[in-house]
Amino acid sequence: MGYVDEVLESLKKKNASEPEFLQAAEEVLDSLRPVVEANEAVYRREAILERITEPDRQIKFRVPWVDDKGQVQVNIGYRVQFNNAIGPYKGGIRLHPSVNIGIIKFLGFEQIFKNSLTSLPIGGGKGGSDFDPKGKSDREIMAFCQSFISELYKYIGADTDVPAGDIGTGAREIGYMFGMYKKLHGTYEGVLTGKGLSYGGSLARTEATGYGLLYITEELFKAHGQSLSGKTIAVSGAGNVAIYATQKAQQLGAKVVTCSDSTGWIYDPEGIDVELLREVKEVKRARLTEYAAARKSAEYHEKKNGEHGVWSIKCDIALPCATQNELDLEDAKQLVANGVTAVCEGANMPTTIDATKYLQDNNVWFIGGKAANAGGVATSALEMSQNSERLSWSFEEVDSKLQQIMVNIFHNIDDAAKRYGCEGNYVAGANIAGFEKVVNAMLAQGVC
Ligand code: NDP
Ligand code: 2IT
Image (cartoon, rainbow, N blue to C red):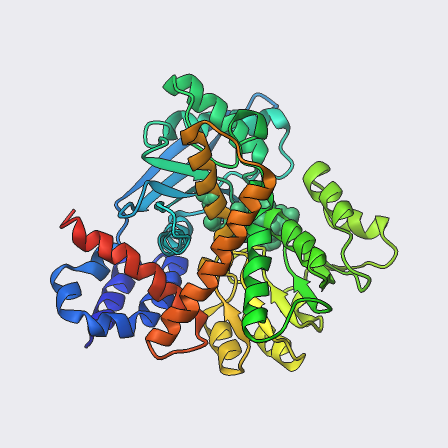
């Protein structure tokens, strides 16, 4: 049995209760085969694959907080510090009832390669809690965030581990966490990114993941002699990534006709009204039924299991921007039947492995999340730079750096795929390019 298969087998035994982590590990290791085969003796001796798939450490803690009725609630908090070969651990905090250690491990593992692709000095980590922010008052959110960080603060720091937003964690939550960190630690430092602009946040961080997704998609089309102008796009999600992906797509001349949330989805043939969507989701924190109620051209569909949702709509480009495994094989077949040209992942691992293979086998250009959504964490790293030099850059400066980073990522993953004989396989290209840099650093730093 080859080295990759041995390690995958052992991972399956050791992590049987963590299907999302196993899925992420299998996707990466499978596509690293040509690199591993070319370096097998060294990687085996140095146990590179065993080391890169085992987190440096996993922190799990109790998060007690008092709700508005005076009742004490208890949630579980996690931080997985996966790999810091190329920089301090960096990755978001997910607040969602589905969060468990396997989900945080899959996200932390992917973050190693994504962060490496940005070309900036950041390692991989991720955190979160099974806390559900939906329907909570501002005071309850603050109580949770303060309790969460009052344990986590011991393990993070501007040069150690720098958390940020993810599902359920936006500027409000980061603000409450930053305030409590500052009080407990007694330092004013860039320990979190995605901060408000008046206390160390970076312009363009809010927009960065969605904008970055469109910058790389644009470069993909350019490389194939096409542009985004006039293209029809299906987006899923209605959160931070989906909103700013939609905004940038429209600026680039495409038409986004869908969005979705956890209870339903919208088909708006005249194009999504981004300002209305922002009002419904960012300000009112309401459901998409409110979008439909305010817009004549929009059809609202309740989410139903077994139906394709936004993927049933004919489009040139599909941008999954909600959550993991939201685009399965049947959805992929529907997209291909409808003539889709490209799928680029705004979310982390939104496409199942068999759906990805089906899309690739049917010549759909496919860029996975580690490359396509790297603009968010890249801009977080730019926020860290600004915090270190105690300066704030203009929106244009950050945005143009972001654009350059995404263009570079596209060419790096394209080149890596070509180097290893799998031209056009951007998933393999991203995994290989991300892996090479981290492994070189691990080898240079010895066994640690
Ligand atoms: P948000 O919390 O802002 O939005 C998530 C959106 O997805 C919401 O509209 C939510 O619906 C919807 N959704 C639908 N089904 C689910 C489900 N089962 N679980 C969670 N959400 C669901 O998160 P983001 O936009 O920040 O994140 C979206 C994806 O992008 C995630 O995979 C995240 O890991 C990834 N990502 C985020 C980055 C960032 O900078 N924020 C950077 C890189 C990747 P509802 O409105 O009903 O809650
Ligand atoms: O998945 C991701 O890359 C994020 N949620 C952003 C992480 C960050 O540190 O900005």
